[in-house]
Every structure is written in structure tokens, then in C-alpha cells.
Image 1: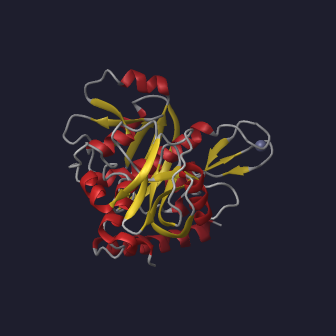
Image 2: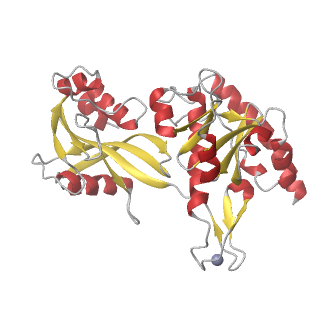
Length: 339
Ligand SMILES: [Zn+2]
């Protein structure tokens, strides 16, 4: 087994250098449009079972640690912009560590996520050299260099999974962390539990020059956005889009076209952006989910996106995939439905 692992390490080095070269040459296509997408981390999953290698990576002189407690990210505030990366010794000194997860490598520099308990985080709030702030605000306000947003999303999602999955769903015994934080094992029934990601469809029903936006009761009073909902078991993405649109606003949709996706670690979603062709017109709102919904034409959408609408109506900011789903329709009209 050791020989196999070492062979994998060797090949991984080659893959990492290819990945870096491709990244520099932008062979992955255009840069990410929304926050949390476009990670430059090589996850190096083959290291996860190698405890000696992981220990060496944690001691690496360029190792960096993202420290998280619940919704709070711990930033170093001495410089501008604040730095989310801590040295391993600095991270350990911040408080009782709940879990440590190996996130991957950036240009061979190891990156880890560390979860600290809530009491430790509370004690840090009074320190002037630190800033505790949630990940949405970090993205909206541009609090850190954007290159940190994808690994912060990765760290928050998986540390949140650990916090909510300390016991075996099969037999209820306490589980233990394995595979560098990427699995929890049950010592009683031997079940292995893996982190989960919940697919969410987020879509814009369109018909000719118009589309439908809705308002959740949670939104600021002037903000309108795409409809969204969780995929259900046994459902394709297209079926989930049609069902959610029918449930929330009473419209029937035909073709569904994939647009783009966005990790959304609140707590563990993957937003799957789509456009859908609406083939009926009358809106019937499900008041339990949507406060308002109506048709908008492209000209009005353009004013909303540019924050120039005469009534102050707006769409979500560019950190959110909804902004880009709407922008694509403004730019291409019903061309969004052409494969
Ligand atoms: Zn069990």
C-alpha cells in the first residue's frame, strides 16, 4: 500500500504542475463571475490517508490555515486588506481546535481549515489585532483578496459538516474524523460517512423579451431575484427547475438550459444556475415561499442591474450567481435557451 501511495504522490506532483501551467494560461476559460467559484487549490486527495505526509505539510514553512467558528471567519486585521491565513502555530493559539481539514495545495503551499469552538471565538472578538466576520459579508464588502474566497468556502462547508455530523446516523455512536477531515468513521458499526453537498436549482423563467423574478420575505424591500429551491431525491435538475417554478409562481416551463454553478457554503449548497422557457403566463404565487413575483422586460432589468431603476428596484450583487443569470438574459435575450 505504501508503494502505491508513493507512486500516487509522484504522479500528483506532475498533475499539480500541469494545473498551475493551465491556470496561468487561463485554459479553464474566463475568470469566475461570482464569489467562491474558481478555486486555485489542487486538492491533492491522495495525501488524505497519509498521516506522516499530512504532519509534514502542517509543519511546512509556507503552510497557511483558515480559522473558522460557526459562521465567523477569523481574519488578521493588522494590515489592509485583512489576512485570512494564519500560521499553524498562530491558529493553535487562538483556541480549542475542534477539527483540522487538509484543503489542498496552492503552488505547493499547504492550506488547512481549522474549526475552533464558539467559546474560543467569543473570546477573540475583543482583540484589536483580529476581526471576526461572516463569509457573505467578506465577499460583499471585498474584505479579503478574492483568491481566498474559494478555499474559505471549502473550509466553511466541510467544517460545518463536521459540526453537524458528530454522531453516526446509522447507529448513533460518536464518530471519529479520518482522511484528513474528509470522512467520519463509526467505531461501533464501521459505517463511513462522507461530507455532503446539497444541490439547489436557481433559475430564471423566460419568455421572449421577458422573464419572471420573485421576492422572498427575507429580501431587502426593493430587491428581486431568481427563483430557487433544493433538488429532491430522485429528481433530475431539469425536473427540479420545472417543479420549483410551478410550485413558487404557478408557471409551466419547457426547455431548461444549464448556465453555471456556484458553491454556496451556507451551510453546504451548490447553486446550479439555469434558464427555463416559460410556456404559460399567469403567475400564481405560493405565499409561503414568495412575497411577490412578476414579469420584467429586459430594459427594466438593465436599469435594476445598473442600480438606475426609477423606483429603486435592484437585483442581487455580482457575488451571487443570480446576478449573472439575469445579466446573461439582458445580454442575450431568449438566446440563453439555445444550446
Ligand atoms: Zn454507526
